Image (cartoon, rainbow, N blue to C red; front, side, top):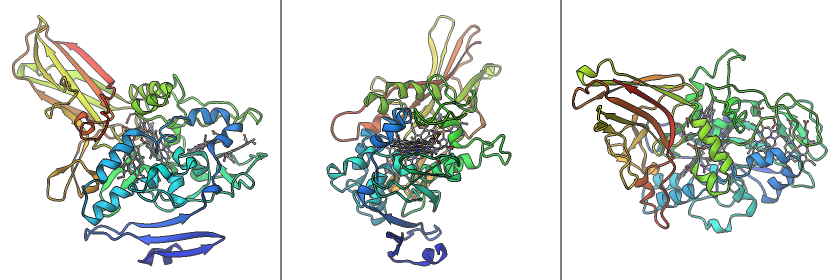
Length: 456
Ligand code: HEC
Ligand code: HEC
Ligand code: HEC
Ligand code: HEC
Ligand code: HEC
């Protein structure tokens, strides 16, 4: 069946079991890119059950998910402002198609029920349930994955509260009173995350986000089941005080899925904490901001080798010890992970500095920054991902990778000089936030991921 569908070029709808499945093939404007086939499913909005209803029984899980980045994916002010800004003034058809596509992942329940289909739709008319982002009934209706990018989840929601249908999850012996339950291998696999956490430009095929692929190619995707750690193995083991990274313990979380069901050895947590401290805090999710700091502080290490300062060289080693993907991952043209380096002589006078934010919170161009830079296809940097036709730079730190950065000092530092190096994280560059129309956003919090201080 899928083979036949993949060959069809024009929009095509198929009626099966009352579900209409529409298939559109998106044209590839670059000769050597494979067309991105995007079959589309359509449902009625009242088929979806509110997270509040799920929360009536799964109270703890609801509390963890509330004000997570998944809950906030539609309301997130940084996302909303950036998506509106990127859409403005575009004329190229492929660029417009990309700039309109955001709602597919950020407002998925709206997208699969027909509104919004585009960023330029009147989003104030978004049905209330769809404003609640990536929610219980969306993930737990997922049956399979059609493609591991641009949200290829195939879902089968029920018919609303009167007939909730099957909720898919990790248990093979669950007998809930409200809905049916079924074991789903997919829910235990990184693929359920990867389908949204791999983002390709819809027209040009450029890899915009590659978190799943980075994990897939890492040692965390071990063929040995004892050593394999899926996304869930870190992100759905975290709880306050237990960051559950590659460099910290990931103990099980015994408990029960509702307050009246059986004790299980592990209940997967639903905080979905990454690195975002700013957005959850703005919605009263201060705990999630703290948990994001705990995650960032257990992701990397830095160390300094001063043995070559006589040749005016400083060697800094940065190691990704805790993340199952690159540091940074996700929107890595946007995220800032950089080195702040300060060298002071015996008397405390600064003889060298790099990566120090200026008074307007702008990071100087000379800073050592680990990121991705997109280009327009002719070698010029672009900040609008809708225009991204090529990758100009990618020096991010891969899982378990150790990177040595050599710094040229202006002079030979005297004995007893002090070197301070910090690896810092910030969600977005201030100069881009300054371009967004309307009320100013920022400065965003800067989190110290790791530091090293040595005397020469
Ligand atoms: C009336 C109470 C109730 C409501 C409302 C409810 N559930 Fe459940 N659910 C349960 C019980 C009880 C279990 C069984 C837990 C166990 O087996 O440990 C369960 C189990 C599950 C499982 C595990 C299934 C498996 O086989 O792994 C998932 C997933 C789930 N619920 C999702 C949801 C979602 C999504 C909603 C909202 C659409 C929801 N639940 C609403 C009571 C409820
Ligand atoms: C981004 C997708 C996603 C969202 C949103 C989500 N879940 Fe889950 N949930 C999962 C996955 C994946 C698992 C199983 C993890 C595994 O087995 O590795 C899970 C496990 C569960 C379980 C089994 C018990 C446990 O926690 O281990 C229940 C019950 C459940 N979820 C309910 C909910 C409810 C209620 C909500 C909304 C408040 C929700 N989920 C939101 C993906 C999601
Ligand atoms: C070995 C543990 C581990 C695994 C496995 C893992 N992560 Fe992470 N993740 C981390 C740590 C630590 C951070 C914080 C450092 C960072 O931002 O990279 C993080 C951060 C993130 C962020 C925020 C990124 C940013 O820089 O803003 C996202 C999104 C994310 N993870 C998604 C995923 C997905 C999706 C998978 C599976 C494909 C996954 N993670 C697998 C440990 C892990
Ligand atoms: C339907 C698409 C979708 C699925 C499925 C999905 N995610 Fe996400 N996820 C998103 C989006 C969109 C955001 C960002 C929301 C925002 O920043 O506005 C996000 C954010 C996150 C973050 C927070 C990143 C940060 O910077 O703090 C983490 C962690 C994360 N997801 C992990 C996972 C894991 C683990 C899974 C699988 C169990 C998963 N996601 C499944 C779309 C998805
Ligand atoms: C295929 C799914 C997908 C699509 C389509 C998508 N995103 Fe996202 N978006 C994500 C995921 C996953 C994250 C979280 C990654 C991270 O935190 O690094 C995210 C995070 C973001 C953030 C960070 C928000 C914050 O608070 O820091 C912005 C901004 C954003 N997306 C903008 C957009 C725009 C604009 C579009 C459309 C042009 C878009 N996204 C389309 C999956 C998607």
